[in-house]
Image (cartoon, rainbow, N blue to C red; front, side):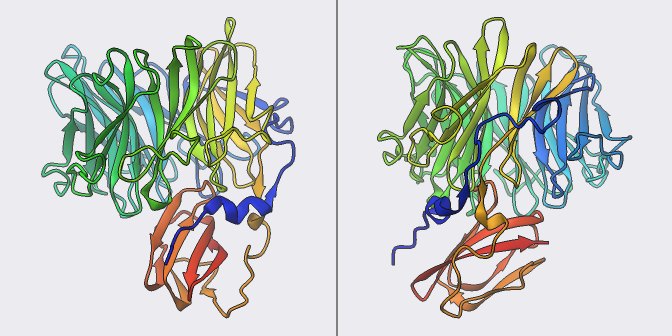
Amino acid sequence: MKQIFTFCSLLLSGLALSQEGTLDTSYGNSGFYIYNSGAYGQYIELDANEKLVVGTYNMSRTFKFFRFDSSNQLDTTFGNSGSTSVNLGGEDAVLYDMKIQPDGKIVAVGYWEDTNSINRKDFVVVRLNANGVLDTSFNGTGIVTIAFGTNEDVARAVAVQPDGKIVVAGHSFIGSYRDVAVARLNTDGTLDTTFSGDGKVTTDIAGNNDAATCVAINTDGKIAVASYTYGASASGADYGIVKYNTDGSLDTSFSGDGKHVVTLASAYNDEPVAIAFQAGGKIIIGGTAFLSLSGRDDFAVVKLNSNGTMDTSFNGTGIFTAPIGVSDDTTQAMKILADGKILLAGNIAAGSYTDIGLMRIKSNGTLDTTFGTNGKIQQGYGNLGGIHDVEVLSNGKIMVCGYAGTTNIFLARFNGSVPAYLDAKDIAADHHGISVYPNPVEEVLYCNEKMEHFELYSLSGELVRSGGNAKEIDVHDLVKGNYLLSIIVKGRTVTKKIIKK
């Protein structure tokens, strides 16, 4: 039986398109909001109540976090009247990525620099409870440092497994070059020795400098990281992708040795910034490509099959690139949307200022011309310093986060599309006596018939569960909210809206 779900086809008829890609002037000050935080806005995450958690960097050895409610007011139930500061000491500390666990705890990663040793940097992982207080069940202090060697170890990305284990990716300076470095922590903050024997693994991709910038976990537990990688081309950096088995060994079903390099523009520097798994184990990588024809950076997306070959159903080659402005466009973040479309966000060079750039791409690798102007947005805001991250609300609106000036969090909101199933009954009415229950669900979702295959998607389009030959799905660890379940029962495909409470 052909058990393939085309997620976007389930939703296309239900998309509500209204001023998609325009600035939402009902937000803040005509679509923008600036908060004088004393820190740069770095990353944003939405908690289960859709409050906005912002992680920052303030150049004083401190990770600082803020939580805002829907009216842009600091949530005073979080930390100390809406914010939390974690002083890590040493020479410096920089936050690079952040995730919220299903239980509401916040995990942030970056590096900590030792004042007593030149160039000595270690991975640092900080975990807060949902109320913004350091989680002392995590290494006794809420803070873990990880050293791979005696020189430069920098964490750039984090992902949380369904079992709560934390995967951290970045680079380690080993010998003469930087290599991809990945560590996995148990829920208590100790290194997981079932991963590569000691909880840590380093990988050289092409014999020169590598540095992982993003990480993703598939539903089968396999891990993929994307890196900027030197050595494969004559000069310049390429997209390097490494895929690991659950035990930390290289997955040799991927490109023969677990490693693959994609050259977007020979002899020029390309950098990936985000990676995601899709149905069937396909891998999407978003980032920037420096194209020789234009002599400038452009937005880029690469799509691979699960075995590491290029997915030529995506734009004919597996590679998409496009400009927004007339100078450099640098991608900072990517989201896979509920209808399978790809949203890229980044910075557009505009004279002495930086504009916000957004681009939406169809699942087939072509621009979505229903978004903005022919699939693109360039939006200025005076002295904006730059944006770093993007999030999509349950109502389809798009939040971007960055910094303006030297000590301000910058936020902006754009209109987007809302899948109709968020406010309606099941997409596909059940005409064959097939039902799932309880719905809303807390722990386990049951089906009255055996599911030959199922796929459960989050609102952002992420595949969070898949399987088959079962009558139940364990969802206890999922974040509260709406999900879309597609199942095959007796050869029929049924789609249901699921509410996790």
